[in-house]
Image (cartoon, rainbow, N blue to C red; front, top):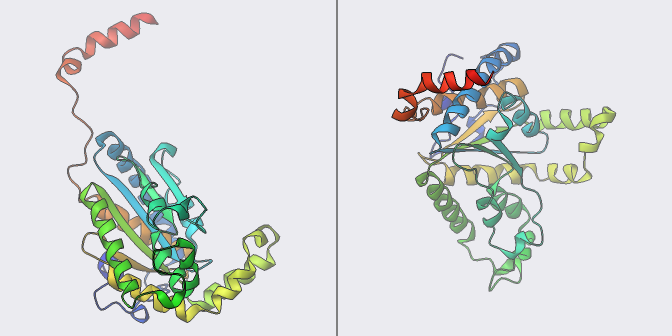
Length: 293
């Protein structure tokens, strides 16, 4: 690509989805993107190993997008070189009875990655300002004081939620979590084609839900909610990236590229220094172990 991907796809304060492409096939081919990804994911794996030993930072990768945007396969392809101990994936679906006994951020807070590890949220805490904004009746399940009907929601409800999410993320970052937020920007036409392929291929039919069609009818509502959420929660320390997702290989490469380019700037992530006692006695320890053979 000719331009810096981070600058090109980072959400600005005047964020408008229409200003971000869903395809950049004229900038890079899927074949080239796939080739570059192979190299980058090896580098990411090595960096995570060093981060695990360093044990002072965690990384959280948030993935949001419409149905069929390619989130599941992206996780598989970007992190396939990682040691399994180094990455934990959480997918947030309809809140359980237990989760509804707590505030809406609780289930996300308890799933945050440990220091030294990567965490991936496949659908994230942003569902609470996306799905619930398109379907505000879902909020009644949270049993918030003073709210027994949608009409009871105060005018500043969503603004307040954006502020709460910003504070939540600021707290993460202040305590050593490096945060990435990616919106997989899929065109409505490409979603249609992918849903059709699910129906045509027997092994993928299980992924299809009648609800997918119902949500697709609310496409414009979702795009408005995404635009609002990204505009109000993209900050210097917790930025959003709106990535073209019509080609899966290119989207995967862009995620990996942005992860690597950002993490390489953390020059303090190094393997711990070997203690003086070990340094001074390496040969003695080696000899002792070799004698056992």
